[in-house]
Image (cartoon, rainbow, N blue to C red):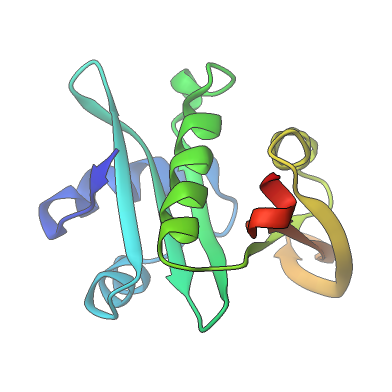
Amino acid sequence: MRKMQSPDLEEVLAIERAVQAYPWTRGNFSDALESGYLCYVEECDGKLCGYAVLMMGSDDAELLNIAVSGSHQRKGVGRRMLDALMQLASARGMLRVLLEVRASNLPAIALYRLARFREIGVRREYYRRNSGSEDAIVMACDLGKEANG
């Protein structure tokens, strides 16, 4: 993984639009870069194949966005990125990483559970859908010494 840069945004947006029903905009990614969020990209065979945005708080980090291109999904790319982000958060003194995931996104939920995330809540009707909305599952992974112990 390497830090995302403005020239990466076209490829990031192409992946985002291909894999998300309601994709982030260029402005969302630009704002994340300008705000100092940890924005990273993953390259596979010399081409961008994934990206992630992690926001640091006082004790917690929040994974705002993570995605892998369709042709590279289920090949370990997402897990490698997630592990690297959790190491970065831990190195910066964060106690846990939080995220929200669509209740219908079973592959992502399985990935997060493998990475030691647990469900801590539900945000009712949080995500838009073509026909209404759907719940978000709020998940957390403890990073403290006792959690990794």
